[in-house]
Length: 592
Image (cartoon, rainbow, N blue to C red; front, top):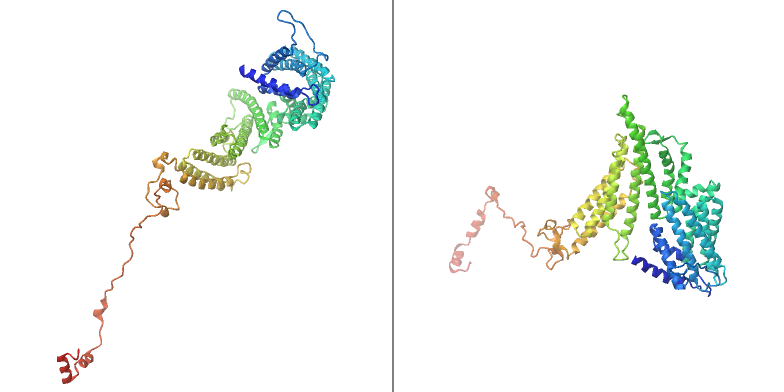
């Protein structure tokens, strides 16, 4: 309550700034005031009762500030706001808040009228009251004291509430005229003012467009149904239009469903006798086309949720029929229990559609998260996406694929089982990749490296199995791109592990390789070695170790004993020749 009062005080101060016209006359930003008030006081969550309470408190404060009280606590004295007393734009705001209070009460009663139809009478009375207050506001704005922009906004506001009254009364022609008048005024205002104000006016035009097309359809324009289906699929027509659009489109599809009698899937033709299943299968192609054409992720998510909700309701209807069929089989003695019945096969087909839609939705969400994961964080205080979020999405995808492989009637369809197996490998690879990313964030380098290797293993299996299934990879994520990303991440991981000196103490001892081998001798392998970035890195061994080398060989002349030398007698005799002279020289040493 205290927070509401603070917000009300802020809105009041903002509205005082919006009540001053640049040309000197009285001015009021009608659409901007009501939109901001609605968003800040309950309508963001569809809480009309809270917004109605805010309007009542706002009226009380305005009357007290302006001195425009309706008597005292003992007696009520009614007063009317006239052109003569219109000296302050807050008088216009007073009438506007009265109209908003009546409108919010009408919307609250509309929510309650789903279970209590009698409240519809009260709803119409409050809507008429809101339209009456808006007409009063328009008459006051006709005064020359009010600027032109406020006059146009008052006319558009009156036309909008008048159209709402006629719409509830099912006076389609009058409602369409009122809504078209409102749309024309807002379109002209959007072309004349700033981009910020133009966006607000265009938003109001988008809100009333489904109402206009719905009125046109009820008047007799059969082409309007196409636009209504597109608006409903893209999230348009919220609020009071949502239920009417749902009923209208269901009615149109029911008329077309009378011509649909069977559906073919996996080579088997199955008769479709349940009306709800016919309606769903007829709208399936339109839903898938709308998802493919979705302009943003929010719209695509809404379309997926709509399709899944319809699919679940259809499966529930088929399941009820299956129960009746099972009871009839128990009574009959000649029942063929071995063959899957047509109704059971139809149930498997609808379950297949549901599971495939779940896979596509989660894959779309995963792509969005991956894109955000690669973006730098703008606000450090705000929690951004993490790899753990993607792991959860891929877990759901793998669970859906596991259910696909167990569908009744497809156990012997080997081609189908191979496709599911291939898809499972692809998503296992992506799940393993993001598990590795989560380990990188906590600096568990060894685990991350092992998981990257596992990703490459899965990717190679996918490439080898995809050769026999050519069309199975067209709707799957690109495995080749994943391989390139993993290879890049591996090198980054190894570099980060080497440079990470602060957390080396926390690394478990079994992850570290206690080896005295120098770095130069193990360049081809990656190991966690904290000493490489320390003061004494083990790069090379110094001094180097002694290595055995071959010494100089020893030669033994074994052939000498078998060699016959030439005779040396002539040499010896020549030495002894000299006679007496030589003898004398030898005695005295002359011959030495």
